[in-house]
Amino acid sequence: MQILETEKLLFDLRPHWILSVKETWCFIPYVFLGLVFWLAGDKVTVFFAGLSSFMPALNPIINFLNTIPRVWLACGLILINILILSLIQIRPKQLLIHTLGLFFIFMSSSALPEIANLEFRLLILWGILGIFFTVLRLNHTRYLVTNLRIVIRSGFMGGSERTFFINRIQDLVLQRSFSGRFFGFGTIIPITASQLGMGNMGSNASMATGGSIGPAMAGASVGFSQSRNTVAASEEFCLYCIPSPQSVYKAILENLQPLAL
Image 1 (cartoon, rainbow, N blue to C red):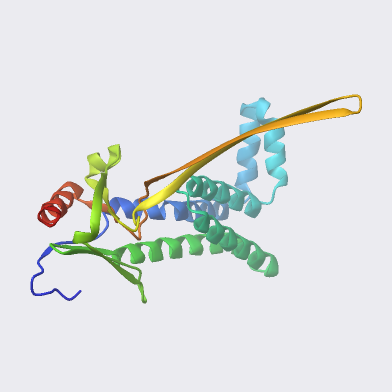
Image 2: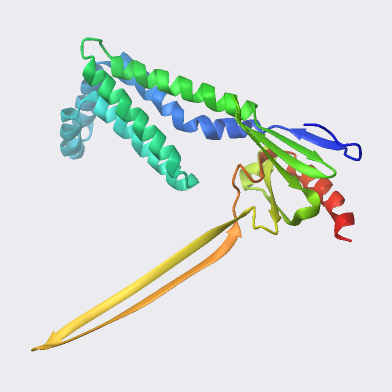
């Protein structure tokens, strides 16, 4: 970034290390389950048999699991984990990418049955590559804060750059969770007149009823819906998961206050 004559660089930040843990968590089951099912081999069936003798009430579930191929079981467990994470983080794109990856792994192992444990090797490889490229992407993410603007750089092999001019910020939101206070990270969301930094939250409910008496019929329906704007911590439009957020928040406010006056 080229610094202007009247501009002073206040902070040159990268995402907090905890974000690498959060972002790579979805790839850890690939490596873990791939290793477990590859190294355990037929011992998985022996484990289920021992569990069945210890807890007879689980016999129907264990008998069903024994009929499922190991690769289906591993991919199913991974898909459940990805589904839960995508719903919590509201990332349907993440669910689609992982689903396509699992489909490719399953089809590759089916097309090359002569290669022993290929599916589990591909699971491990996919997990390692996912962790590597996620950490690489986060290492190429930078947040530059000056007395005049906020610059957000993200991605590698091209990437993107977005600039917020401080004199156009109408509101500034600091979000810190309990873990953020403990580990020292948080998110700063600049809100502009064009509603950058805001999202839409909606809900709706409806009820319908009907009945008939002889040839006569009657019905009624009631519907209700509402929507409201709310602060949205999108990585593209905010200082997402940065260290020492309180100091950065205070510095931006100090440079924002004279402009407001």
